[in-house]
Length: 132
Image 1 (tube, one colour):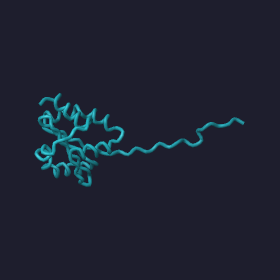
Image 2 (cartoon, helix red, strand yellow):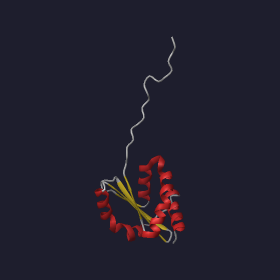
Image 3 (cartoon, one colour):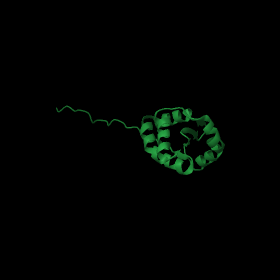
Image 4 (cartoon, helix red, strand yellow):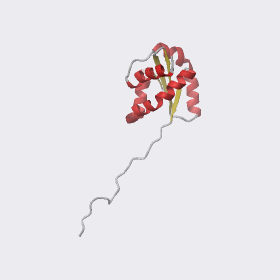
């Protein structure tokens, strides 16, 4: 498979919610969970997701800092909740890079650090004032 076919498979799985392959997860990803968790904790990340494609089948896993492990559709759903309104934008942004990594290395590993932004507050005293 070339990068274009991998990208199409990723798009279907991540953006069109096609089902993913449990057997591919078990074959390519499951045995590396502890290794990826150790890397996640060493880098003080919040979570990591790993995705692979073989013959059009997609498998992914997501591991958070509490070592909760999500597989395939459950991983996609967690990622969607994590990114909330930015899920589609982030997925489209990462798709080409993930496809390149999968084409070259067999999988794509993406670490995520959650950065909380302060909530905006309304400025006090900036409303309409009467001129007396």
